[in-house]
Image 1 (spheres, one colour):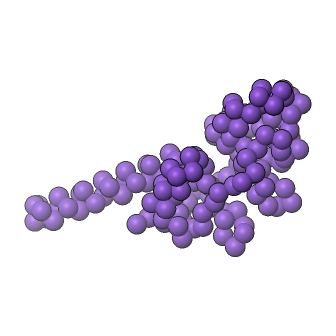
Image 2 (image 1 turned 90 degrees about the horizontal axis):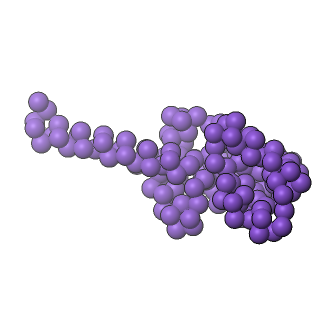
Length: 144
């Protein structure tokens, strides 16, 4: 089973972030520039939330706000689910599915070391399955 640590070694450890006092508009600009669907919200070096396209789409107008004057801290998801580097990809998939989230920060000793997305997890599961199939085919055909 592939661990989150192994996945981060493959995909990289970059996790884009923003401060809670930044505007929603600024967050959307960063998300567009970096081509990501969510930003971690960092205050005083700690993950205090996550701001996603879903937060924007579902909360902004419903709270009577506008993107140029609303802050990320007003709309972010405060309860951030996370995994540690020794978690398996299957653990991530189970958590993401059960909690309906697409992004999981990776924390080691309370320090941010990366982020995994649903796309990362699905891609790795497919890769792992392809490897297993190749190994089984090799075994069945006697190595020919």
